[in-house]
Image 1 (tube, helix red, strand yellow):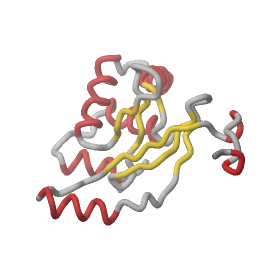
Image 2: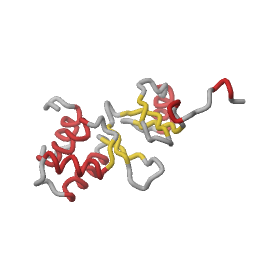
Image 3: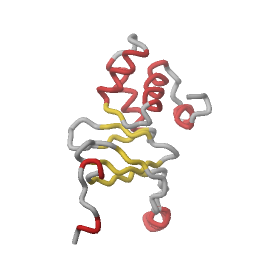
Length: 147
């Protein structure tokens, strides 16, 4: 993580200080590529810097959510898994059996984004696209065998 990190720049642009808690939580999120629960964030922050308290971690996660740096996603649980938003958007498929994430780049939503902006008069800054299913390792049936 460098000062040129887009997430650090987002914090600066929004007028927030780069506190030790914010930088540590951001480093944990970036190291995990953003697919991490709050319990896992807490545990890793504790290992890196035990002086950072639970309240600071949760306030930081809330701030990052408000700024669009992360988004919570709920996979058959009330505990969110936080997803790091790179460049304002993120796309993945989640296996509902093993909870593994499969990321992909091209979501094909450019036309829809442009249409929503024009039709609704909004400026869209990002999106999260999630699909759910069963991965091949967990026994998804072949597409040929389905009717």
